Amino acid sequence: MSTPVPELTERATACADQLRDADGVLLASHIDADGLTSAAIASSALKRAGIRFETVFSKQLDADEIASVAATEYDTVLFTDFGSGQLDIIAEHESAGDFTPVIADHHQPADADTEFHLNPLLFGIDGSSELSGAGASYVLARALEPDDSDNRDLAALAVVGAVGDMQISDGELVGANANVMEEGIDAGVLEIGTDLALYGKQTRPLPKLLEYATDVHIPGISNDQNGVLRFLDGLGVNLQEDGDWRRWVDLTGDEKQTVASALVRRAMRKGVPAEKIDGLVGTSYTLAGEVKGTELRDVSEFSTLLNATARYDRADVGLAVCLGDRDAALERARTLLTNHRRNLSEAINWVQSEGVTREEHVQWFHAGDRVRETIVGIVAGMAVGANGIDRGTPIVAFAEKNDEEVKVSARGTPALTRKGLDLSVVMKEASRAVGGDGGGHNVAAGATVPKGREEVFVAHADELVGEQLR
Image (cartoon, rainbow, N blue to C red; front, side, top):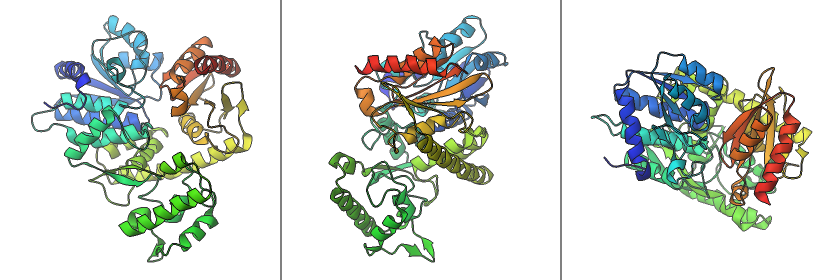
């Protein structure tokens, strides 16, 4: 059998053998795009291998959630896109004979281990940029290949998970993610090319595509509706067809070249730094089997659609879409996406209006109940670089989780991680200092802390970041 990530082959094979030997498997997964695609990959592989299983989802895998898992009838539990950071708790249940864990994850492991632990970090592969949770699940799926399939078609979902987990580096997937991508291309489920690196090329009307493209801020275009229309009006490109705005995907190759070249020239004239201009173009990842012009055709839009499901307590909808439901589940997902976009827009406007509090090494805001705790991390990431919010400083965001607890999300940048920032360590140590717990990746991490302890938490986080970046 060929293998997408040779370093993980032996461990993946051991995990697959354990799953085959089980009478039944409880599949427990996270709820973001990476978690949903991880669950879809794992459930497809289990089904094809003839292994009985049941799927459950969790916003955060804490002691109570793990205890509820232990109380089920299953002797084998497969954790996808989480579990590594909770290995200390999981190991206690394993020692007590509650269940045998199999873990396919990419987060920073806790100070414990188990035999069936598939995590790229254990083999010298960066879990924040080179292999996502969906990628780890895909490696496991390849090891589980049944007689009539090698499961390489599942690489498409692994790429959606990686992109949804913000693992694009300098415009493309790298490391083990690139190996997974190549298997998807060979299987005919994935296509790549070079294109504008803007979100919404499949579904957004062309003027909105440019207006909302703010990662590279171009004066007179970004966030400027009238400016965009003036810009496009001078290009000689037909913008409408049958009374509707055309989308990027509707343009011919020559028309795309005309718009892209003019966009670069405008950026140069407006003094946008060369490295920023380079970011306007990147590798595009397209799902070959999906309908052109839909949210599912482009991996970035697919991942956003998934984030709009489970984060609003409809993981079942996101999973169904991943597994091929293009009828009721897809329509429900689109409705949830509309609501998700509205919530994000309102939240970003609120953060910009209220501003952030600046400490010596971090900046932070507390949304209370104004922002749903399942999306506060997305809001924090989108807020970085907005008016009054420094892109060069890690941001910490709070939102109410329940009457006793507060969700914390932290976001940095690749430039900061190269200087030594590791938010996984910051969230874990600062939260435990106030009676909570947390973890994640160096560039993005989260925690749960007791309500009322937020400012003490910030003080610890500020000190830890200062030590990392000094």
